[in-house]
Length: 260
Figure (spheres, rainbow, N blue to C red):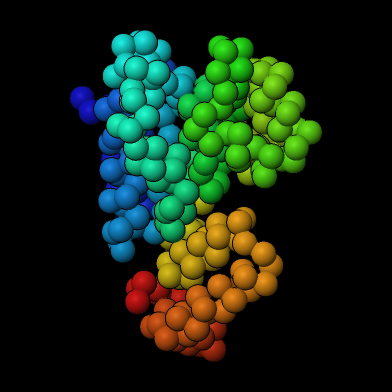
């Protein structure tokens, strides 16, 4: 059985971490496969939204400590700096994706798993979800958490999460603003599918351009981003989707976008 599952329905692709007996702890194989799948789906014009979730009762318990200890995870100290290609790891690959990724946080997420969830564009959490920052294991949130958290919730709250290292239940995840919504566990899958279908119904080129513009805007001045957005807009004016958007508005009907 594959450690990472892929399911496609219409324009939505669902990626499932599939080591439920180990709470979906991330193996070296999973790291490689996740990066491959993210890039493959992002390059597929028929995929307009992705869902990332976990099999069983947990989302992801972090890096498999057995792999870390043996050096087979690809992030242990036994790997030389020259051989470790950080740009090919899932957290950095995710930052380059133009296709929206929605996390269906179905249970506990620790360390690497927490960072994977936070790296998604949307986060819907089950009321059984938990976050466990890794500082009490003697490490840092090495997979994006130290960059993401201050931007998501501000400096003081990020320090509360990272430096105290407390386990956060669903109510704390909601209080801190780390999820778009916290839902009864039995409603999570349906709600995630609904959000993904809503995303997929929008003009995919405009969605990708909007996500790209916001992502670049995190590191740009306002003026630079304004120029960037105008360049995106001029390209969108040339598309069939733009003409369909105008026509559907005038004709008072739902648009049918083709991504062209």
